Structure formats: structure tokens, C-alpha cells
Image 1: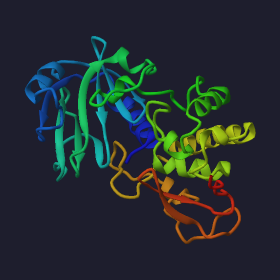
Image 2: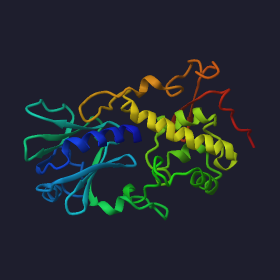
Image 3: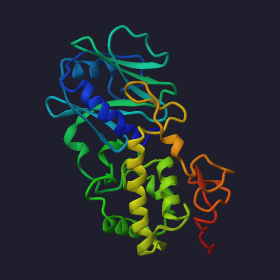
Image 4: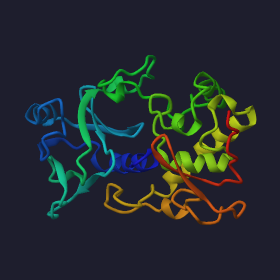
Length: 289
């Protein structure tokens, strides 16, 4: 699933490609793409609008529209936003097509059909969720702190971990209502860099470990952006090119390989239903109660 670096890469590219363009036509080719809003109503709200900017919020690509609304795109597992110029054969898994007035277009492809689009109030994306998200409520209203923002300080992280002290650290990092944008890959890489086992209770981390985790999270996310994201399977940037971050993994998907730091064989397990990799020596397992 595209995480913060992949979505940030796409947003930065699209910012220079579609900002200022006017939507001439929108066509949905998958009936659930805009649920619960019907595709024809969605198209009527989008057509004629000008894209005034592009940014990222959590794992959402945000295309800002004139009139203070925003088109948000959730890529989910296999979604791709591809900028098109001229006559290009449609992607075999195209689910939506945005044609601009100047003849260019934006194509949304999604092999597994998990991606979604919505038109929302742009201001709703900027707040930090203050109450617990209820089942069925849209995630974009409850996104947490951006890990590359100034608000994400060591102090903030320490207080956040203490509030959820009984939770295992790795699943807590994946909770988008706490910290927005971190996914499985970069949580695994950051925990290895910080020397923290994925199952350590959040409240058990010492002050120096919290500082290391804070530094590691920001470091791996920035590196992921610098390398254009990770393309292990479906991810492609807005130009259809692969990222290079998969060549830089230290422990993610490296089961059985030597740890780059100590040479111990990298282990594989499942934490919170997600495949997890760690070094048994660099990341000591917590004592069982």
C-alpha cells in the first residue's frame, strides 16, 4: 500500500502538472469508486472546477479545487494516479478518467478496486481528530498529526506513547488517527533504525528510545521521499515510473538475510495482523509478563 513517501511523491509531481487546469469531464468506470455519492452527481460537482493546488494529507492525495472544496484520492493497496498527455492507450485497470480542458488528463488505475474518491470541504482535512473515530465515519475527518510537521515533536511523541502506553508500539504507529501517513514498511524500517522491538509496549520506552524513534521516523520518511517511494509491486508515480526505495530496505522483506548492523539473520513474524520484520539482536524482544 502506498504510504507517506509514495503519496508525497505523487502529490509533488501533480502539483506541477495539474495545478491551474480545469476539469472538462469526469467519468467513473467502477461503480463503487465515489460511494456513497453517485458517480453522476460526483461528476456534476467536479466538472468545470479548477485545480488550485495539490498536496498530501496522511495517505490521501488532495487536489484542491476553487471554491474551497477538495478532491481526495485514497490509493489504498494498488491505486495509481497517472498524468496523460496526447493519445495514450488506457490502463487495463482504469477506474476513473479526469479530462482537462486543455486536452491533458488524469487517469486513476486500480487493480484490486479498493481505491476511493471523494469531494470534501478542504478545511475538514486540516484539523486533528479530537475524539475517537466511530465505525463507518470517513477517515479524513480524524487524521492525526503529520510526522514531518513541526507539531510532531519529541515531546508530542512521548506524550502520545504514554497515553496509549499499553499498546504495542508498531500497531500504534500505524493508527492513522494518531500519526497520519506511516504504514507498514516505514514503521518497520524506523523501528529497526531506533533499535526498538515492534512488540514493545509504548509506555515502556525510555526517553532516549523515544528520541531515537522520533529521529528514525522522520529519517526513513524523508529518505523514502528522496528515492521516490518504494515499488515492490503496484506503486508507480504520476509519470508511471517506479520508485527506488525498495533497494534501500534494511529489514523490510529481508527475512533470512543478515542484519546490516550486526549480521544476525532478520526474522519475520506477524504483529497486529501485518507481516513484520526485525533483527532479534538489535531489537530485543520484550520480557513476557
